[in-house]
Amino acid sequence: MKTSLSRPKHHRSTGRITLNDVAQAAGVSPSTVSRALRGERAVDPDLVQRVMAVSEKLGYVPDPAARALASQRSDHVTILIPLLTNALFVDLLEAAQRTLRAAGFQTLMGVTHYNASEEEQLLREQMHHRPAGMLITGLDHSLSTQKLMARSKVPCVHLMDLPEELGSTSAAFAEGESITSGPYCVGFRQVDAGEAMTQHLLAQGKQRIVFAAAQLDPRVMQRLQGWRKALKASQKYDPTLEWLNPAPSSLALGGLMFEQIVKQNPAVDAIFFCNDDLAQGALLAAMRLGISVPQRVAIAGFNDLTGSDQMWPPLTTVRTPRAQVGEAAAKMLLQLIHGETPEQAQLDLGFEIVARQST
Image (cartoon, rainbow, N blue to C red):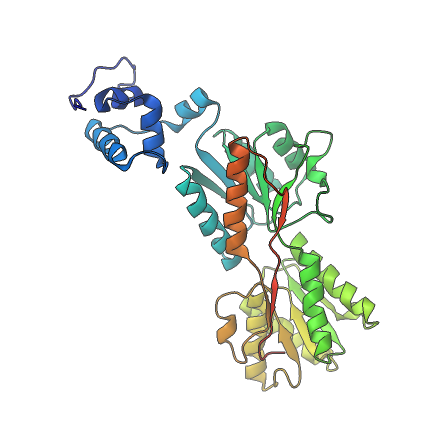
C-alpha cells in the first residue's frame, strides 16, 4: 500500500503530530498504529516497520496522558519496591519489566524505602497516570493505602508475600472493597523459610542458634516467627538469642553484629542472619578475628545473593525465587488487565535451603 510521508495538516492548536496523522500517512487504522508503537507481538513485523518509519519521518511523539484519557487506561504499569540497593528487588524488577514490555506495557517504578507514608504518596502520584495495573511489594500497607488501592479498581498483584492462609483475604482488602477472589499474590511463605533454615541448623547439632536481623521489615519479622517456631518445637527457644537492629542491612553491620554476638554470648554455636549481606559481613569478620566457621560457630543467611557461593567458607542460605516472582506476578497482572481470572489467586513459588560449608 502506498503511503504519503508529506507533513499532514492537522487542527491541533499545539501543532503536534497526532496518532491519526501517522495512521493516515501509513494507510492503517489509529488502533493499529497504537499497537505497533507499543511493540505488541501480534502486529505484523513489516507493518511495525512501516509505522515506525512514518512516525519517525513525521516526528510523532506519543502523548500518554491523552491516550490514557481516551482509553480510560494507560499502557503503564506501576511497580512499587522497597529498595534498589538490594539485589533481591533488582532481580525481581528486571524480570517483571521484561515480561510487561513484551506485552506492550511500560513500567513506572517507585521506591518506598520501607516507609508507609512514602508508599502512600507514591501511589497517589502514580494514580494520576491512570496505570493499567499495579505490582506492589508485600501485603503490609497503611489503612489509607489499602483503601486507595481498593477504591481505584486498578488490577493489583502483590509481590514476595502471601496471606497467612492461601485463599484468605488480607487486611488490604477491607470494607467490602476487594476483588472477591483477591488479594492476588506471588511469593513464598517467609515463616516457613525461617523455620526450615532453623531446622537445618538444629539437624547439624546446633543448640544455641541466634536470629540476627536488620531493617526489620514485615518479611524479616515473619522469618523471625519461623525461627521461634522451630526452636520452641525443639524446646531450645531463648528470647535473649534474638538480635534485632532496625538499621539498614549491610556487610558492615553484619560484621559488627557478629563481633558483638560472639563477645557477649560465647556459648552461641550458630547464627541465622535474616539476609545474605549481613551473613557475608559476618564471614569476613570471622576470618579477621580468627574464629573458625562452622567449627566454632555456624553462619547462615537468606536470599542467596550474588557472592554467597564465593565466600569462605561458602555461605549456607535460603534461595528465594525473586526473578520467578517478578515474571509470574507480571503474567498474573496481564491476565487481570485483560479481564481474565488467574487459575490461582495466591501463587506459592516456594524456596530452597542451599547447604554449603558455613554450616
